[in-house]
Length: 124
Image (cartoon, rainbow, N blue to C red):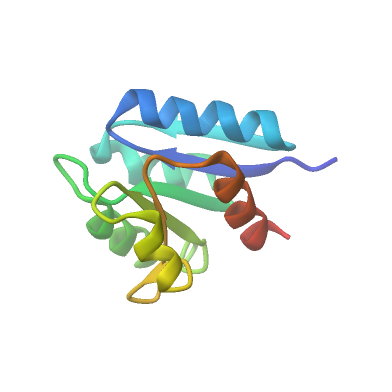
């Protein structure tokens, strides 16, 4: 069975590793974790993920800037990105159909069931 590649990006190491291990337990995924925003573009080019899960608030580069940089590369323009954030609640995101401003978001703390459902939506 083909393992789909997912890049997890979060400067909070405990959260990033929780997401990585949770996904590995749920399906045939190959997961790479990156905690340093300055290395994300390099990781994307090297790993070539099918999906990117990224924290929106990071230092020194935030997720929206990184997403813009990734999408500016023609090779990754169509690579889906799902943001996760602690700045809004799951109820606020649910009220907006899982997105804010047209961008998919998952609220922290992340429920693995929600994460898996959202990942499946993009990797089917």
